Length: 244
Image (tube, one colour):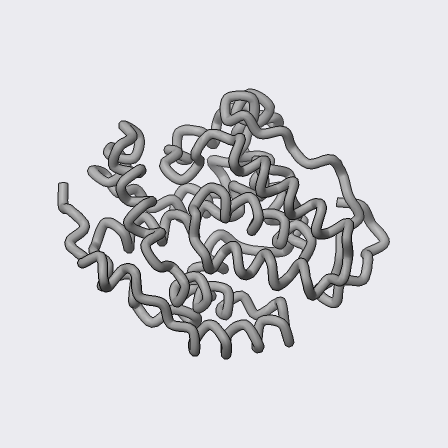
């Protein structure tokens, strides 16, 4: 197995100017997902090395790095997912993407627009783990119960910041919360952070094998209590008429 060969100094570097410009653009238009990936990359600091160290300490993580499956291929195989029982993660994933009007490779395209390829300079293994985190993002939505609206995305950022310890993720959660001017949103994000701390570490999960698992059973194993239904919010933080 290849070791991450990046120096600590290189991984610890921050790019505040990139963050400033990307954050301004993201605040102006929260739907521009590419800016999210710019901020995560520019503020990664030593988080990629910490994630890599923990990833390789787990048996599942080592198996994934040995085989390097393409999760998008599994998520895009609609026929196989539709053949699964109704209560499984795979079927819940299909319901999520259909409701949100998204595709499995949508985040891949956004990340290409928002990143500079800096992850590859951190080492091949770290780059692969980072891409897998991106590819599993919507599965995290399904497991936690947060929708794809701006409130759901912000809360999931809080959950993810606890799991990944990436300062960029935490900054985006904070910025979106402040922009909402809502104490209720702040409470939800703080609760999501706490839920991320309590949950099993989800970064090294072998999602390919979990798609056929009953969602309720998976949540129980991961110590995740799905969020209660809430009123979705538009990018301008106005409430939608339909509950998530």
